[in-house]
Length: 371
Image 1 (spheres, helix red, strand yellow):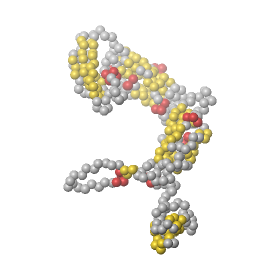
Image 2: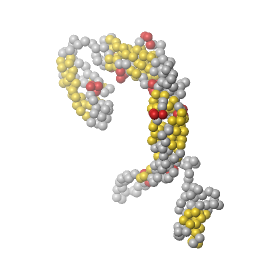
Image 3: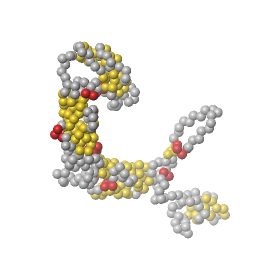
Image 4: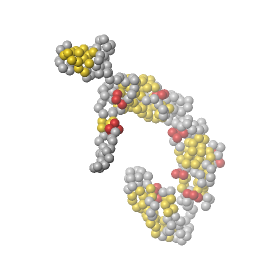
């Protein structure tokens, strides 16, 4: 008896039956596969079984199952429900395996008394796994969506019920992100053009299209004209920012004017990394480290406790990212000694015509010369 089907968890998580139960009027009650398993007596009676259900957090409550035993009660046929296979479960597959065990039940016995079979009208493209106890149905995908009838039989009382497994056509699934799509990286204040073919996957023989300009939104973007054409996006990063950004859009796997085709749509979000022009300060975690008096010293890796903002120059090792200039010295007209130039100067090219920087000792300006 799957008693948890009648119970509700406040946090909407699955419930688990505890192994300890208390029964009155019935013997040998066990918990098996998260269900109560028992055999009713041969005479008419009313029995009660108290059980405890737990949620994932470990919180529990107790309920009571009342069992009315009647020798003249009719035999109920097996319960069988329709099962729908999501199109996303058929990607890169020519057949799909469906476990129908969650969709069948035996109100007049145990689950072990049930036998699953394929209706004779569908045996050319569907089959049940090996063994009479198998609940795995394999369905071949074809060019057309289909409903495959399957039967569930109570082998003790020989009563049967029928339901359907609904599967989509081969290669028909909503647009999804490509699993190995290239990373999108853009410098602050710069623009990147995105071909959605490189990031969105659709069924065989189809192409992705942007549904409309109104369906496109973005975070950390300075532009609003995100749509270039039906297959290209434009993103301009805001200035003075480094970190994660994104662009979200609705994509279809066909053109709307083609009324005869099946058009699938999906909302897709592409992550973007914005590289800042300045280096933000790192952040530090503050763990509590316990050291006993007289114990051996502990070595702490401080770099593991330090985090740099995603997208900053200090978090990447990329030749395309500007690096700090080497330290150089300056000569001051009023100071015979040389001092260190404390600024990096990416504009210091060519060396024979360096910019002017203030001397560290006087207010006069001096040329920054190579060290």
